[in-house]
Image (cartoon, rainbow, N blue to C red):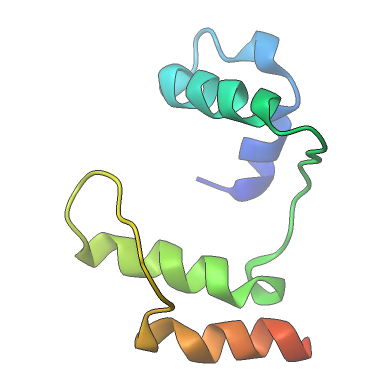
Length: 87
């Protein structure tokens, strides 16, 4: 799904109702309400290498929540790219 669409949906919680992922969107909305200062905005994947790297790697992980105690070696380059602002 296009992340711009997710941002649009998340900024309009009254539109979740008929969406296929309504339950997931509502859970995300509940979590966001717990964060004091949260702003959602679309960021192109080229400007957020680490998030793109993690999303792509998720296809090879087991279903469910996955926690990392430290930065996975395969994600370090993406983090460096984000830190230096490389595109």
